[in-house]
Length: 181
Image (cartoon, rainbow, N blue to C red):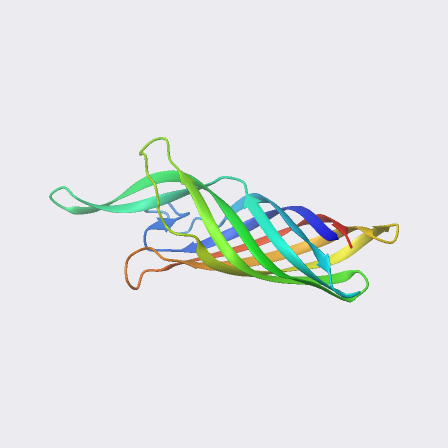
């Protein structure tokens, strides 16, 4: 049995006609910083390769939903809401050399969205997602216990329900992991 649990900070970016991290009228807002917790757990099939199941959750983040309203004129209204990104997937963890490892995965991204002010719900189905985690062991404690520096990137395309207006989600997280290999 192998596993690694990481905690880190990351940035994400959205490309969506309706949902954005930028308040209407402020298109230069930077990507949002968030905390993330992830884990890979699996079974070694050789000295340098393991099959893994992956899970990840982020801290709640704040976004805006743009809504076109007709009140004599078409106007865009900002509806603020929060969401948590959940990733689940299957992959492999490969250690090409002692202390360096790669873990590509494929799975799904689900966004849990909530808004207490406007009762907004975005009912998008979970999206196909994929990603890659790369790690470098900083310290070894015995033969199988390691503390690692990790970087992870994830991507998904979410269906907005409007033809030609699919959203893309990109997340980059850097952190520290405990790894049992």
